[in-house]
Length: 392
Image 1 (cartoon, rainbow, N blue to C red):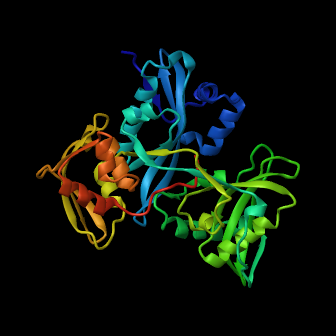
Image 2 (cartoon, rainbow, N blue to C red; image 1 turned 180 degrees about the vertical axis):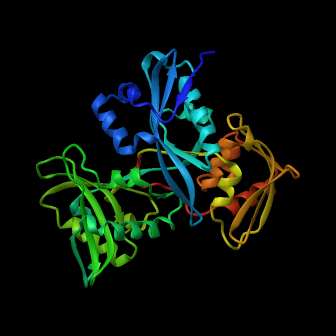
Image 3 (cartoon, rainbow, N blue to C red; image 1 turned 60 degrees about the vertical axis):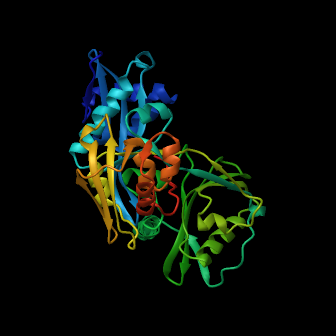
């Protein structure tokens, strides 16, 4: 078997080789890859070596992810790439496996990513965990009521702390949303291909009550506009932001935004008319299973005990018999106990986020066992359908 070596941090002399490997995987320039890694922080870049040369790499994006109102420490994976000559030889699996083991030793509870190759990540224990939807609407399709008393103005860097506070308060109530780290916030505010990200705030008197971040898709109107980020905590703020967008009708063809079928901002639009598609499902990996169970929140009224046998070939510390205990809005795993059901770590990820219930996971062949245990797991983990607005 080929021997691979993981490097983190990456030596400065190896940076061009890592950038080249990832750039060739995704089809952009080496310079763009180096800039990307610089913005993400070279301290977060991982390199894979074989036969004395760098053959691949990835970028880690530290953040949290909200479940049950609590942010669970998580690591996002982006830009996972292997040189073409080394594919289908186990290099990507080796890189992911070794990095997951390293992350577990550092206290990371979860890992998440958008998968270009589902089978690869399922092989190392990632499970389907949520969706990233894209909605499209024309200015003419925006028909909402008035929002008297609220005003809009352009926001600048001095407003960012208030924007971040609004976002975090809203995200804590959205299952699967990120507690954004530096890199994800950078993606919100960055210029892209020379086009600036504009920030517009909604004010109730002097108080910032909501905001929108948007970017033109082309330099000359009329053109499409991408809504990068939106926080609308109340119906009035929602209406005022949609009014603001509708007012751009002479300069905009279509608006595109990350949303979900149950997003109140999206539901404020009249239907039919606007269109919603599933753009990119995302996957989640329970890296430190006891830590992940303890870190998230649970319904306060739920009190259950479930005996689990967990299968995890990549991180065997997670495997074996556990008793899940949920009470008073908190959860914990106790080692041992009577086994009522068996679940793979991939299937447990889908249960953990609430993306799929036990019956669905069982139908996929990732869960077997007692019907009563399945019902108790659904009560422990069930809730609003998870979704992410961010890409990384």
